[in-house]
Length: 257
Figure 1 (cartoon, helix red, strand yellow):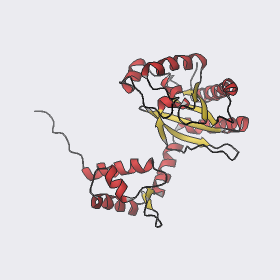
Figure 2 (cartoon, one colour):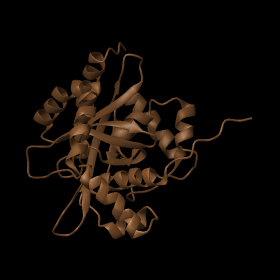
Figure 3 (spheres, one colour):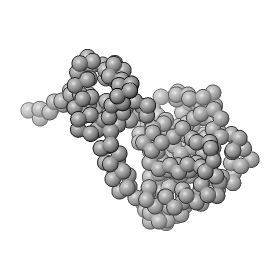
Figure 4 (cartoon, one colour):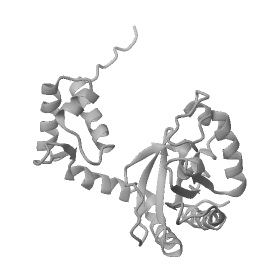
């Protein structure tokens, strides 16, 4: 007789779905929108939202009634991120990149076919990138993501991208698996990846992978700016700066190329 499958608790499933939805909604969402997104009655969604709010996991804006992640998540998240070795090792090099380029510097990790920003240091100027720690974006349209995808084992890559068509964010986004493979070959050859308005029109980024002691690309570091700040003529120099920073972090993580 096979083992009985332990049932999951629907309310817990819904609570986790709400947390994930709100994590990707920095301006917050109302109870009606949340209930639609989790396909649950508004009364059920409201009960879960209220429970999470009372526990400190969510907060409600009294002016518009919208919910967003609460202070407890910031505390727990900071503890988790602080325990992440690449983030700690990368901070001085992110600061150096900002100082040397006057652009925004990022560190990201790969989670399935998306990247998650785990550190950001803003440029000193008025122009700020629409990114934040915890934000997720499809990996194939970002320099940070492509830098890590370039070093996946073929089977892992094919598992992540089973279809031949990829989602597009702009008219310049790589929208096919085969085109992504061709780009990845170039990335491996030069040591850094380029996002030339592939994630957002008017934005260019370069990034290079960070390796751990076993040679796995555990993160990527890079810089981003507007097309006015980053000309195509600047890309090679910025790419080499990102590659140098990534190599130093990798050595600090025990990687011996």
